[in-house]
Amino acid sequence: MSVSPPIVDWLFLDLNSYFASVEQQECPDLRGEPIAIVPMPTDATCAIAASYEAKAYGIKTGTKIYDAKRMCPRLKCVLARHDIYVDYHDRILSEFSRHAPITKVWSIDEWSCKLPPNKRSLPEAIALAKRIKQGIWDNVGKHINCSIGLAGSGLLAKIATDIEKPDGLVALPTESLPGRLTELKLSDIPGIGINMEKRLNRAGIWTVEQFWHTSPKQARKLWGSVGGERFWYQLHGHEIPEQKTNTSMVGHSRMLDPDLRIPEKAKGIAKRLTIKAAQRLRRKRFYATRFSLSVRTTDKRHWAQEIHGQPVDDSVTYLHYLDTLWSAMMYELHPYLLLKVSITMYGLKKPSEMSYDLFEHAFSAVQEQKKHHTALSNTIESLNKRFGMDTINFGVPPKTIAGYVGTKIAFSRVPDKEEFRE
Image 1: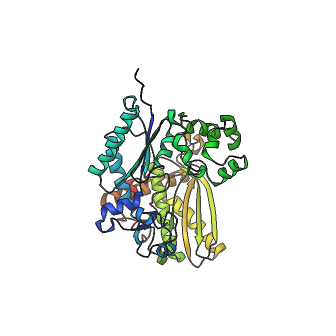
Image 2: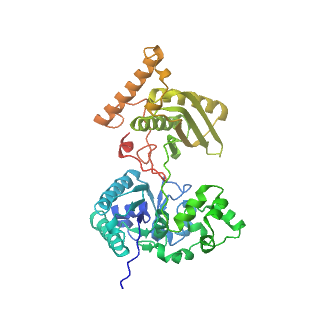
Image 3: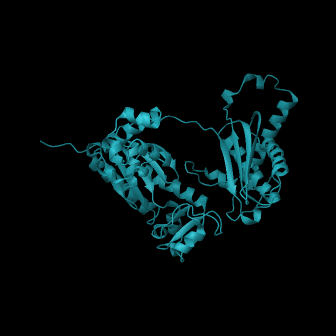
């Protein structure tokens, strides 16, 4: 009597040391070398990524560069090129799509696939994973490695990618659980942060195996919400439908280059961030009702304030808000040098969510001004797309070491390619 092979429903892909791997793919002289990707060329900054050769010295994301150079004197620091990483991301997604459907892109270097029914037997899933790996090497770059996890739930598939790196392929079929999960620490499990680990410890749970043998109700009690119960079922190989989230804000922030930290030049960066955020807002067809400016100084002071207003999407209005908040910041903070500036637009609304009374005086001077501001913003954006970035601008555009302002890859957001040309 034949035994059916285990079934896995999910495939999760995690690119290994992604930013560093792309740089090694692009630059042959960096291959095999310990490198750190940095946001600016100064030892006071932190590594935002490290190659496996650098990780061997204990260098990781967040390591201060002056510490990293002490740990590895031959470390090479490479200025981040977010536009190149997005380009490779798109190419890898395209290659992946040749083999299997993409269910969700989680970040610049992670995505998942709900396997088609004919690919869910473990041998078929493993063969598929190997074809994806080979396709990336053949059609994107032989120095781009990934770890792939296979499991009954998306959470378990993601956990599986962390068990073997680089170039791992690990399956955690439900029938084998807890299996290799018992090799992991609680902090290795996505969703168990420092505070949750302390809470579990206070309840007498110190290992993944101990948590595995709790009950769904106990997990719910430990989390203080239904999220704990959902987490328990996912860890046991049961797929729970993902809860839909909505966009709640649009914004940009930037750590300032050393020669852009005086307030006058920093404001130029803030203006560019504001314009870029407004362009994203229009591209996503949102209006915002709150505008926030936040700054941090080199002497570790922080200032933040926001303006509430009617729903708008045009650059002109937001630049006026910026002028108002910037003046308040200068008066209250008296900064000598600024380290970071952030712009955020909250209270997002779709056109269908706008109250009718906003338009009942459609021909009033205020409404006419709003229409004029939106038209002006769209015209400038169109001309810049047609004739090149900064053909027309609100003031003199700032020059940065990276060559662009505001656009960077966040933990869970992959920028649109258009953002690097705005």
